[in-house]
Every structure is written in C-alpha cells, then in structure tokens.
Image 1 (spheres, rainbow, N blue to C red):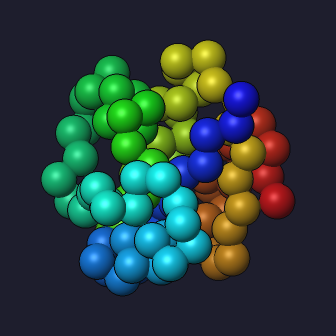
Image 2: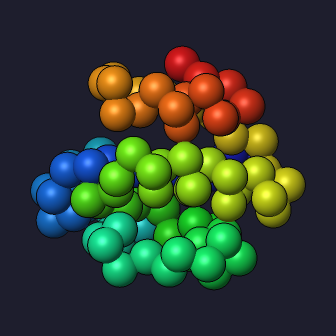
Image 3: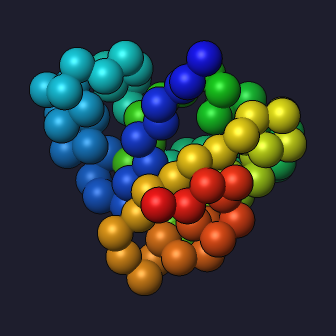
Length: 95
C-alpha cells in the first residue's frame, strides 16, 4: 500500500489547488504547516491523517520524514531544491 503525501514550502492554498487538479485524495484538507504540532508523536498522527501540506519549512520536512519512519513507514521522497537535501538524506529512498 502506497500513501502519497504532498509536502511543499509553497502557499498552502496553492498546493491544495494543484493537488486537487491532479485528483489527489486529501487535497480538500490541505494543512498549513505553520499549524502543525511540534511533538513528534502528534506530528506522526497528523502525517498519517493528512496528505497535503503547504508552507513546510526544511526542518519540518525532516521532522515529517522522521515521524512517518517512527510509525514503521518506509519513506520515499523527491525534492527539487537545496531546502530538500537533508530530508532527502533522511528518507529511506531519496530521488
């Protein structure tokens, strides 16, 4: 079973709109990462319950990877910028 997550530093409304155009599940409930919990267990719950995130900082990307891994998920991540490097390194598979 593969669960797709969209994790972007871009504006949450824009991220949700693009995810919706692509037909991704959860696009209608895009979360602004500025409202995400900092507690690792609460972060893991938020990651499992949601699929689309905007305004995510580079550190939050690392925290999100770690949160999913802490729940036994194998994490594959793609990235396109310097801001993604550390999370890509932390992921089980970095593309």
